[in-house]
Amino acid sequence: MAYFKTMLVKWRAQLMIGGIVLALVLALFSFWWLNRSVKPAEEISLAKASAVKSTEETKEKVEKEQTAEVLLVVDIKGAVKNPGIYQAAANLRVNDIVNLAGGLLDNAEVRGINLAKKISDEMVIYVPYLGEDFEDLATDTEKTDSSSSQEAQGKINLNTATQETLQQISGIGAKKSADIIKYREENGPFKALEDLKQVSGIGDKTIENIREYVTINKTD
Image 1: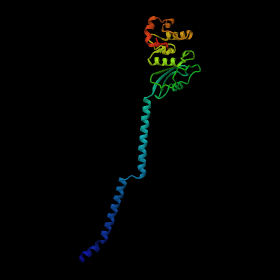
Image 2 (image 1 turned 120 degrees about the vertical axis):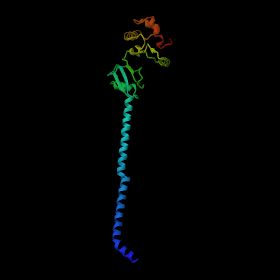
Image 3 (image 1 turned 135 degrees about the horizontal axis):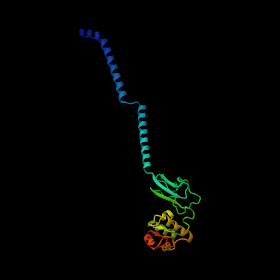
Image 4 (image 1 turned 45 degrees about the vertical axis):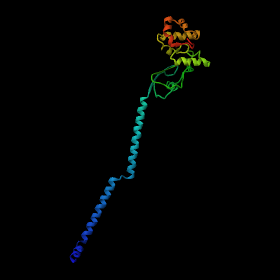
């Protein structure tokens, strides 16, 4: 026992120093481990903010690409200040295209144009001039309903169609469509399809070829 007591007294100082060193090593290791495993709150906040910004930028880029994909091409002609071809978003209306074209001229006739209609790709908008069209518009409900029904069937009304629309009829070119409008202005609306024979260059054969595609606002 005396021997062990002597050795304990002899090595006490070394043991104490060793314990202190070991405690310091453990403390430094713990500090390093905590800093390695846990990010400071500020660093975490910055990381989150960066992630949110990246997500927003990606979303904005996708939205821009989607918007670019739905641009429509519309051709507007007639009584507007700057007729031409315009690119526009799919949710726009005819009135928006009129505004893009600089607005209406003072002698524009818009009574027969649906300015609230949504545009479509490759759409042609024709704004007639005063006196060019719509002088004999239907004023009663029965006539208006009849006209709407005929338009729904795809028929072109010879008494209200513009020169541009008349040229969509097979066999009716620029010259004949202009002559048809001139006849309406000088003689009033067509009362029968056969009245077309009064227009230069139109005969029985032409009338028979176009009969199922046109109307004069009456039951043919």
